Amino acid sequence: MPRTDQVADDAILQSVIEDMGHCQVPVRDDIIGAHALFLTRLAMPGAWWTGAERVAIAANSRTVHKCSFCEERKAALSPYSIVGTHVTDPVHDGVLPVEIIDILHLAMTNPTRMTATAIERLASAGLSDAHYVEALGIGVALRSIDQACRGLGVPLHRLPAPLAGEPSRIRPEVEPAGDAFVAMMPARQPAPPNDDLWDDSSIYYGLRAMSLVPDAVRDLRILSAAQYIPLDRATDFSHGRTLGREQLELLAARVSAINDCFY
Image 1 (tube, helix red, strand yellow):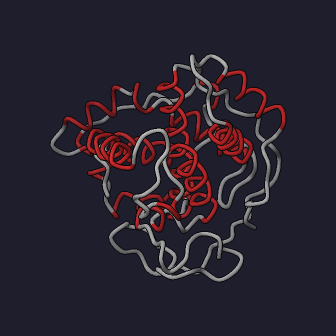
Image 2: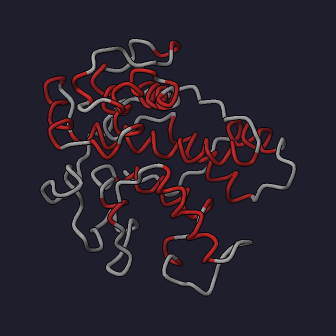
């Protein structure tokens, strides 16, 4: 079920507040709240991964840019011509299938070389395209949070202790895989319980690419609203934050180019 009515865990919220206290200027409450809410959700069972697996995915997403194997594969003519082992988080060794670690590293360090075949290979490990989307959603969201922390000069937030429980394994109504290599929800306002995701006037392809796992879209929308701009104001050029809309777009475009953003 959707989790739009959740609030951040008090202990997690206080931890984020303490982290943000290291910033030399005040940090807006909505940024603090968005970070704390994501971490609260991270600890819970998701659609396809348990809480322990979700936290392990987050921890391993933090190792990708220290992975020499990924650097070798990125420099190679074919990433699959290089044999090696990924740098992983030792605290969570053995929690995740090696196949999901491999594709998470590929997606986060070399996204332009992601292929439909790479995702289809997960089936041999008993993993679906939805397992991949949920894992990628966690990695992308945490990367966004971590980069915000680095920019503010504050410590990276501690990952939460996982909560017990089983994944919901609920798959929404989707259309067959297309350019995003995974199935996506149709480009129209979804029926309940997912009617909060978007409407006919606010379809964003990058978010639709995550819509096989609706809560992944919710996490990114909340973070986008706090750290960038609310999606319902994305086409409203008359409003900004401290920076003007043109300045926001310039920074966003530059960061996207540096990160080889697929979209």
